[in-house]
Amino acid sequence: MKRLQKIIRTQGKAFLEERQGIKIMHLKGAPYERGYQHGALLTKEISETVTKGITGAAARIACAISTDISGGLNALAVGKQEAEPFIPPEFKEEMRGISDALAAAGSNLSFDDIVLWNTMYDSYCFYNHPDPSNPATVANRHPYPPGCSSFSAWGRATRDGKLVFGKNMDNLTLPGILENRILTIIDPEYGFGHAFVTHPGMLAIDGGINEDGVEMMTHYSPSINETMQGCGIGVLTRLILQNVHRIDDAINILTVYPRCTGINYHVADAKVNRSAVIEVSASEVAVRYPEQGKDVLWSTNHSNCYPGWKGYNGHNMVSGQAKPFQLADITTLEKWQDSLRDRTNLYISGAGRFRRYEQLLYDNYGKITVEKGIEIVSDRRDPDSGRERGWSEAVPASNDGATICMLRPRVTYAENVICYKSKKKITISAESGCLWSLVAVPADGDLHLAITDFPAQRGPFVHLNLLEELER
Image (cartoon, rainbow, N blue to C red; front, side, top):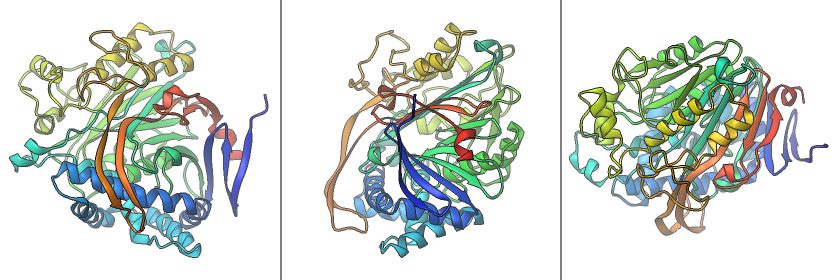
């Protein structure tokens, strides 16, 4: 069947198209060139998303740290100032290209605004994390909703032995976000071609797939060991996608480059059927591999690098997570697991989703395909009660009934506020759920993306092939 596609704009070697409701941006060349293409192709979308998105993030942060919008904007500015020196020159050049294209089109957004936007999610994570030295920030913290999740399966776990990788990007539907979800495909001057979903003006967010069969995903996993003086998730995502040939390369990148917040990086290499979850904070790196004899691995928004748990041996990353999650007792493996099951604890990010992945992956062991992967990332069944949640039905609380395909109630963070660098007044309200879902067979370059609905899995999973797209 002929694919419906429409070229919307072109800029030199780059172009923006729409295919089956998905906006796809193709970029090619050196860093500055890619950035200029990005800014020229998405001038209108960047102006809308950045002004609304920065205002929305400031409102969310303001609620987290008990201040107003101006205090939230100041927190973002402080985070940007601390993180900017750690952005590799290549990606600064890409950001400069974006800002120069915007300036040429008459936009009032500056290079500093693009850097602010590209450090937003890192500040967003950092300021949602309470300061353990200040009990008031723990007591007043606005609960962080459950976030992203992923799985990988290969060998004996899949029907044909090929590695299947599924991932959900869960976050807030801040103003401008849902209508501006962009699949980006980059053919760089140096390194591997790669694909990922992001927002206009943002270099990357949550991982993606490269032409060498590597796929990765990020999951916020809070720790007391956090800082803004390091590389954020977008920078580390692009470093991994553009440069990683084998998993050890990703471990090296995450060890050598300074890091900001606690993040679980799920990285899989489909060429050799190998997978690992690299759990990091600003000061620690730990690597979790599959259990002995099992060809599956999965990750959600809490650390699982606890000695003795599922075959892991090494540093106990949970020791840095107990305070942010307000875990009752982590002195033994059993007490730690009991603490994670506390449904009344609003600070835990849906720990039951980890157990639900385990149920589904083991129940379908040996039968996993792309189609089964789509079922898994779309699952809305409570891991404890077995009750299936309706598509539009919100889960009761952050750690109560949170499902793999998750939806949290709409929250209003600020009303009738003036947008950043704009005269428009908007209300900042958002639900939390899946913005996009991806199931891929990285060795073949095949990816199936749901991005046109909310939660994303409610809409169609559209098939593309990265290798074919790079040839275009």
